[in-house]
Image 1 (cartoon, helix red, strand yellow):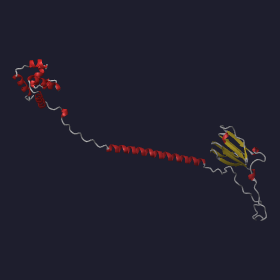
Image 2 (cartoon, rainbow, N blue to C red):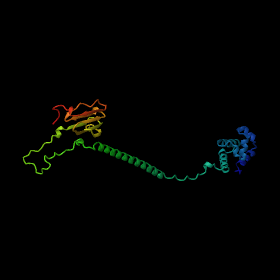
Image 3 (tube, helix red, strand yellow):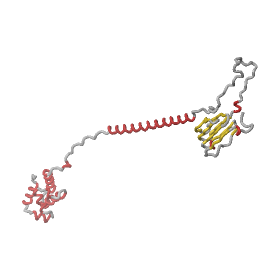
Length: 269
């Protein structure tokens, strides 16, 4: 290790005054090994820090030397012989941080795509529900209420004389067909939603669901057979006469209607 001359200077001043290390040790209470380390510039044997400077001041005071000058000489000697620690060396500048714009742009694109998918699904679900409601409404209103599926086909009255091609006399009264007066006319009205089956003269003319407030009309010549899943949800009217309920509410019911169920003189004409 290269010496700076501080130790030789200190030793020379001590020997010029005829002082031994033991005498300095007794007076300053500094161990001989520390005094030897100062004169030999063996800095690694010293405790370091403020202790080393305190030793230099005490020795300078004992030898009658200028304390501040000797401390400055010690500081210069230790600075020349001891390289600066690694942490005091200038560190290379860290590379500039990468910009965060690409990352934020990627996050924004992902959020936009998720929002677009959610919006598309909501629009699809809404249109699907509207289409389903339209199909249900179409099914409920598929058959017009004023349709008369049970009406018997009208038959034209046969001419009195098939071979007579002459037109009737101008003053001849037209013939009157009384078949409508003999027909049975049934009106079925739903007070609540239920399933109804109607047969006219042994032929099924209706079988389906009826919604509240819906009514249907049927015509027969002999009888009607009416079945309802909820007997209390159906109101029956035969030739204008309101009939008794088919059964108890909440239970299925069935009834057969003929001319015998009509009251004499009843009905609306």
